Length: 156
Image 1 (cartoon, rainbow, N blue to C red):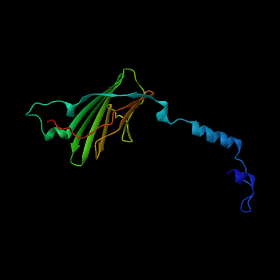
Image 2: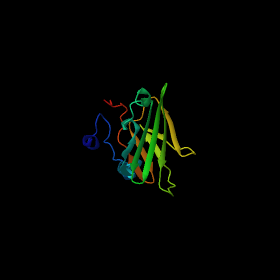
Image 3: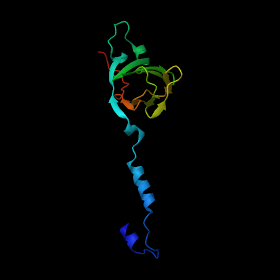
Image 4: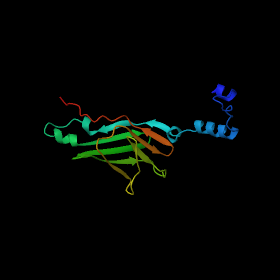
């Protein structure tokens, strides 16, 4: 680029420098943080997985694979997810337990799709496959969940 600024090339005059205001704005954009980068990250732990619970001999079977309940905890936030396999995909519902007095808008990011709680406080969505990557944001915090595995381990 230095050659283009210094010498005329192909019969055209040298390139002028950009106005100082434009350069300052471009540098400010490059320095700006994305919303996810401004949130404090918290890693959640899995505290309940119905697929990992032992079951009595008469209760085990393929029917247990059609639904799963997961509960995660991070600091004073709990997220409960229930997934049910349907004929053409998965019906999912989640509920977040937040500290009292938390009026911050919260959201759930499931595999890149953003969901907000309904009037009942529940997050509901439908998917052709079960979720793998889940994030939960509220009050300047981003809760990161372990990546979910939807292959049932053999109980032998």
